[in-house]
Image (cartoon, rainbow over all chains, first blue to last red; front, side, top):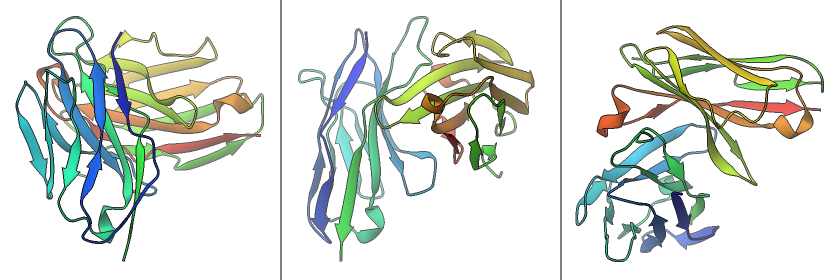
Length: 115
Length: 115
């Protein structure tokens, strides 16, 4: 079946540091890949997505590139801010087939950014 | 639009009691999802409705759980009788034609504690 593995947290960084959160996946075919963010006490919000190999999703300074050869979708940001403190989830959705509505999530990575 | 609205935000109940969680999806959305979030298992899809019809309820843990969507603007998730292991955050999400790679919008969740 489909699965998503992301780096264990928590991750603690100082403001303006570089961020990488690793995400790898297992899926058949060509899934769509997503990063969701969950701020304290809130629901999940879509941060960025990529729907095919070599696509780069980007939003709010975050980027992730869909690498089919390494089955990865690592999240990066060049300079984090305190306001980026949240839990980040990598997720996939099958590209086709009967279950192409089902999001499979990683366990989440808690990021804390200190001033 | 106010987004996906869930109620209550917090629920504390005693074991054996019936619990009903409510969700109002975004107007015009035709896909609705219920997810459960726990530390041990992460985010799990419980049930998926399309055009008010349950399409996939394979994630519903057992017969104590039931979900309904009587119309396009309302859904409930009921647990009867509740057990301590049901304690979790329950999210509702909605989307328009989610199979075609559109975004799923999540509510703020209901934190359920069964004592």
